Image (cartoon, rainbow, N blue to C red; front, side):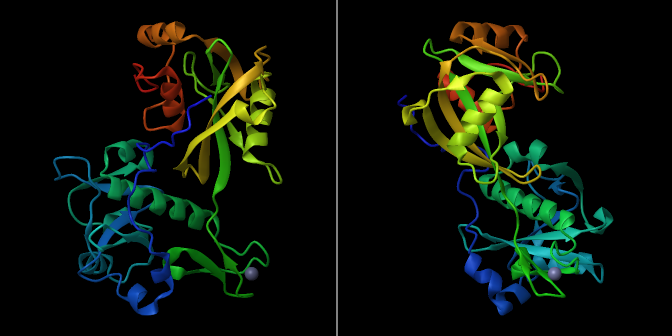
Length: 315
Ligand SMILES: [Zn+2]
């Protein structure tokens, strides 16, 4: 296997904001985040308002002073997301009430809006949603049950009782396009998916497990296919943050040493080996629908295939 390039054009992995983490603990910088020189995006339940007046898909962004005026005395927490290439600070304002946000807008989730946003805004949105998911699910200290207070410009939650700092979670997961010696590719259909929807094999890395061991285990558990034991049987290609709710998808190509399919019928309902001709024909007829081109799964498949394939889950 010679495919060693990292993904350089994958959604949420392209260069975006400079996180500038050292500024999170600068009290004066944090105190000034709602000022004229900053850009504020709003977040509620993992969604953000999209600017209804813009020609192309864009977040509804306003200056810190505009946002502070709209917020008034209402409760909100903020996250410093980073600096854009011009050094402008981006801020997420997490609110309980969408009616606070002025102007023409409609709200969208990251899955729907992400692919169409400029890279800096996509970068801001993916961090904001990740933090928002985490904070909504971690309202109490996991050690003592005490109330947690936002710190480090949004990036920590500190227990008011024992002063323990809690940090945002990222759950490592693997996703893999398995190939065989005849250069066929293995796709599986999740038990909950409609007929024809298929994807690469994926699963979470368990405590004490390497990502490579997780690839071998997940592929075998879900499909019965065995990945070769030698290091050359696995090629790491890149990663994609996928905050639904908190995954980091690590993408591989793998080479099978035993291609016999024996699906678990629990997570995976069916698995099929596709030759290149079979995959194109199935995509063109609509019998096979692949994940959207924003996903690392689609990129793993098309990296194997060598060019874009038609159709996806939405069509
Ligand atoms: Zn505590």
